[in-house]
Amino acid sequence: MDQAAGASQHPASYWAATAVGDRDRPELDGDLSVDVAVIGGGFTGLSAAYHLQELGLKAAVLEQHRVGWGASGRNAGMLIPGFKYGFAELAQRWGLEGARALLRLKLESADLVEQIITRHNIACHWRRCGSLAAAWKPSHMEELREAQRFNAQQLGYETWIVEKDDLATELDSPVYHGGKVDPHACGFHPLNYALGLARAVEERGGLIFHGSPVRGLQRAGDDWVLQTPRGRVRARHVVVGTNGHTPPVVPRLHRSIMPVGNNVIVTEPLDEELARRLIPNDRMVYDTKRLLYYFRLTPDRRMLFGGRGVLSGREGPPSFRVLQRAMTRIFPDLAGARIEYAWGGYTGFTLDFLPHIGRTRDGIWFALGYCGSGAALSTMMGRLLALDIAGRERSRYPLEELDLKPIPLYGARGLVLRAATLYFKWRDYVD
Ligand SMILES: Cc1cc2nc3c(=O)[nH]c(=O)nc-3n(C[C@H](O)[C@H](O)[C@H](O)COP(=O)(O)OP(=O)(O)OC[C@H]3O[C@@H](n4cnc5c(N)ncnc54)[C@H](O)[C@@H]3O)c2cc1C
Image (cartoon, rainbow, N blue to C red):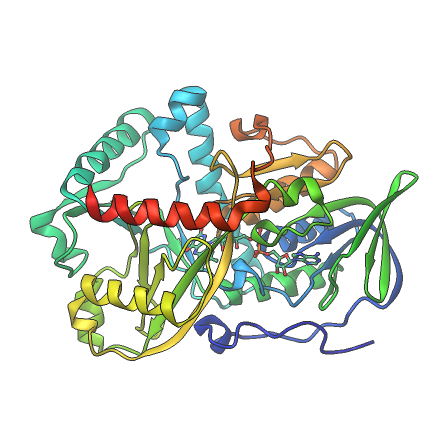
């Protein structure tokens, strides 16, 4: 067997440069039979395999490159308890009980990640550090206040408002108009979590193959047969955990997910006093801009800054320069800071901007469409899939009733994304 199958991690990623335990794994070679074949070695797929093993089902993860190669190893590591919609909007759709259940889902997702980290001793800089939502425009402060009131009064969920005059206690930036602190948010080193989770899968007897893209998927009686370049897996169940990388081999899922690019830059290590002044409480920060910026300090006090390149997501110097300009506008003190890492990745968006979990008409299990905020939820979704496959009882969540709809004009998605980028640019700067 090839001991070093699959592409390496992104060469310019800070997380890859500071990864621990990124071991080679073999490519699938020959025939294999398991209970469940999992496509994708990100948080969703690894968590599904981990929990399937816990429930006594044999799982094999097929990853086209290597564990954590997708968004799971490239994200900002910010675990924020929210969705694209505020909880008041979710309550309008699903009632207060529905909104409460969705909040619980998010909070329990972070708890689950923490339990796995603790149980398996995963060194990934896990912190319950809280987050700050920073108001990009004065009018956004009213929206933050409303959200804070709704969450406290209707959901019993305590967050607090920071007025512009006090913002320096949370953020040293001339750009923002105040913010909202959520003390429940967490942070971690995402790639080290993915690598630790993979190790935990193997400790539980699960199999992981690198360099094993699934190219064919067919029914064989009650089973499925998955074809990779040099091997075949026969399995009773198939889990798809490919999010923004969902391949055409699962056509219905492929057409229902819009891959949206996101870029990240990381500075050289900052002087300790400067880092402490810029983000004094070490929060995970994101702003209320429509195409938002997000930023945080890394464990060695660099500024990690992410957000809009262009929606079509092509990473590269032009996108990174846009980010660097934005970063120095937000933090003028960083004008001279050298950028030492810069990379991009793909998030997966659905038509309704909500995550989806379930089973296709022909019986393939899936969880995807985290719309840029799946760092914690994906681990929970993997667990929920495992419970369903094992036929166990579990809580149900409102979003599970949603139909995963194909994206219209999928073939023209490049054009649609470019048009959306222009629209967002115009809205952000003109209104
Ligand atoms: C730059 C960036 C920043 C982000 N920041 C945050 C953040 O701070 N907080 C947050 O909550 N979320 C964030 N996200 C989103 C978050 O990373 C994702 O929601 C989450 O990682 C999704 O995990 P996943 O396992 O479902 O998918 P992924 O991690 O993308 O994994 C999918 C895997 O499937 C594999 N695959 C695809 N096709 C095949 C095939 N045919 N055969 C085998 N394998 C295949 C891919 O190689 C890939 O490894 C960010 C995303 C990006 C890109």
